[in-house]
Image (cartoon, rainbow, N blue to C red; front, side):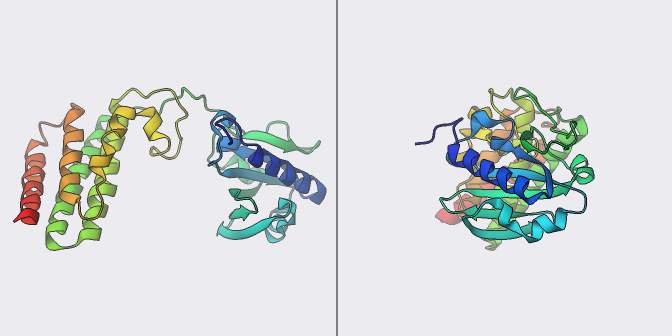
Length: 270
């Protein structure tokens, strides 16, 4: 079994890709990202292979048109963006990559890249954007907190009403996706995280490790398509537990949500 911090299947594939890029003569560097980037200690048998290829001038399209540099064993390649692909290799390695020239790389949004291979003439200052494991996201402003709270509560009300109308799919989305997302943003802002890699682009990544007490509430908040009234009540309880500034001002809206969610539960048992 491959243990956390050990992903030889991914590193072996990266070595094949590096060799293919070097042989092609079309690339300047290969950068690993995520758990094959500077965060290697969290790699495990479920990790994806995420990477950037830095192309030589004028070679981006050639690298995208001919994927032989990936090293063989390619089962599926889906071009999901103009810049790259999602790919599946024999043995189950799944990856996602983009090909940029140097100028495009310098404008791309990413963190914690790691140089896997670099051509001798590659620029020495390729951006890697290191971000320490202990780095925290910026605290929400008062306006952002008010926005998240207002969106959470109003989406809960919409969701409960749509559930009572019979629109269960829309109700699930407003309650267990939209409202919960805003509630989790507030919970993460109000809670000191446990040690672990934060994702710069997705709060939900590794949420269970970083916010275990909040994560323990998720089962109640995510009961599924037929559970919207209970989800609304659980998300209200989560919000109330955060002792948020502005909660008292929102008490009337919260009470309306709670009343209608309880009525929806009573509808089901009547």
